[in-house]
Image (cartoon, rainbow, N blue to C red; front, side, top):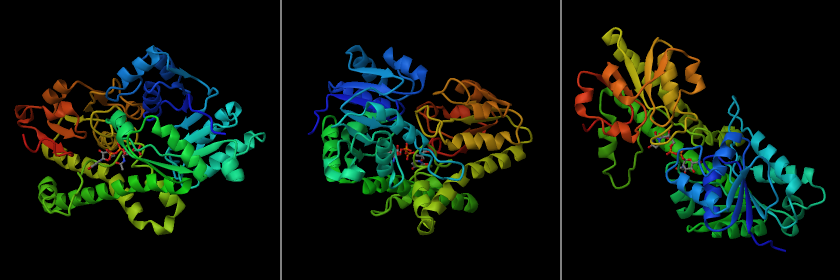
Length: 417
Ligand code: SAJ
């Protein structure tokens, strides 16, 4: 029997879970969000948000005010569960599934016959089956699709999130979704859930294919950015402007080179390719090489800054931007932070500007000698300006503010001014 979906429980209220919960609530369904972060739970219940994402505050505020969204510390009974917890990697680049395992343990006691469980967290191939096994270990009174197939009491699917931070609310509704079930019935049930709020098409497949599709999307982007980053190393060596090369090469009808930068950050593109490598280490030399190129870029940028500093004697240096990309507050795996750390290893005092966060992250506070300052103060004080993130605030800097300064522009923002 298919249960009508009227109440949804979303586990994990981060960059994906909270927007998902708010969008579903905005369609009139009752949504309970679950998070272990008590501050986030309190803020959400006051109609506020703990992350920077355009328009999310308005949506959450409206949903809470209408009584359709609330946040709690532990899962409650619902018709459908969406799992949106982090899946990071360990030091040895192995997938770390601890949060998913905890989510399974946490929802198991409240599961009822007819429930749907969808994993949105990016996962190594095989994880959806493993999740089903974890649940069955806790609930021997229910049947699960990895054992009982079509007739299982609980339906389980993987529908990886594909939203781009900075455009999450738009992409969550507009993008096509890949919906992979442990059985075809699981996929159909999950598609019914997404049909409630997704305008894009739902493409049904099996769970293992859906897992690899998501990992492939991010590995594909990583490889393409690595090409641009490798090209930037070539251009630095040959003293050619890489942005000119990219612009002109992209005039070819079948060439579309991405933008070089200080490296690749975030919790997705810098992480997910490793899940493919872990499953097939001997088959992935290209994916591994891309990771190496992108991870090596911060050290290369820091070396360029060092060469500039050596020429000037004892210059004041300011680094602009810390987040992993423009106009967000997300610092996870940020290459900008790696560049700052590299520079701080040989420079006693360093200024940084980050308009989207109110304090330095702990990894930089520990280093000592790094001071967060407003943009104007950095422009005034610095002899060397290192542009690490193309935040909107840095686009509008006047050419006169850069006069007489050495500029290391890793994003090509100031080449036109
Ligand atoms: N970057 C470059 N040059 C580029 C593009 C990006 O250096 O031309 C850098 C960015 O500055 C950043 C990193 O790459 O440090 C990743 O940024 P991104 O904008 O490419 O992607 P994410 O990590 O914010 O989001 C990605 C998206 N995946 C793809 O575009 C294939 C998004 O759709 C996924 O939902 C998200 O990963 C995720 O959660 O998996």
